[in-house]
Image (cartoon, rainbow, N blue to C red; front, side):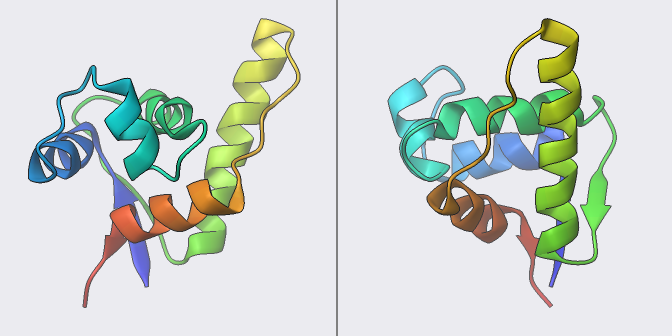
Length: 99
């Protein structure tokens, strides 16, 4: 399965669920529970406005998310976070392109 992310797609995902962009609890739940909002923000940060990023498989997607996290954590002098299995499952479900 192919996966993609853009600011537009993320907004469509939220609006399709009736979620406003500031509803941290609902975004947490949608993106896999604990730290879901954090990973939603990471996806927004890694994707330039007006562009779409895409991957051939979930491993490419997960590796890109982790690489972005590693880079930004290093820039901030912090230890990088790792998405949980629940976060990864939810992100893959939400960003998968059918067909």
